[in-house]
Image (cartoon, rainbow, N blue to C red; front, side, top):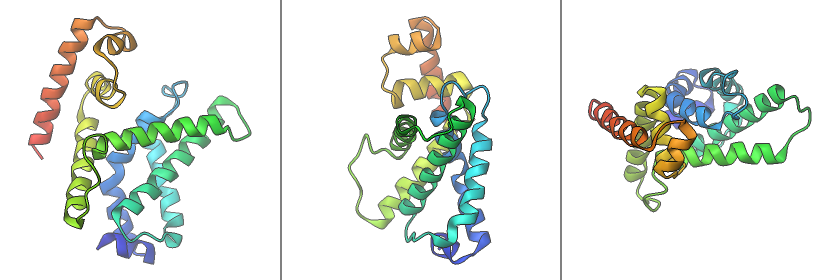
Length: 195
């Protein structure tokens, strides 16, 4: 199993795990990037930094399951995003409030993907593995959508905004947001069906 081999120094296992989780991390990074930095920072660049840190720190990881590994990657992502925010926003000291906001944003996006807002924790290993595969597929599918489609789905379902609030946030009319949302869900369903 990859998760057992990676902390023992198996570079191929770690590379394969990071490849599997890359799109998931890009989705989380896109949502976690501070609003003042979104034009300056590419989520893929953030994920590349996460992968570099993961390569350096994998030997000390005590991960015996994918949930622990995923939580470890999310922690690296939060630290990377906080470091970028300090750099771009010109703050030298750690800002606990900023880091907490980034952590909450990443946790919210992760919770949305893995279905914690819908179902209780599953107990069997096969159910956990199936859920893990499902949230990785959803992250990949969301990343294939256009920016507007992805944004309307995230605002509506992850952030829980009403259509009126989504319209205001996106600078669109209520009707256009409803239509955009329907098209986004159709596209998402098509992409998920192709997998």
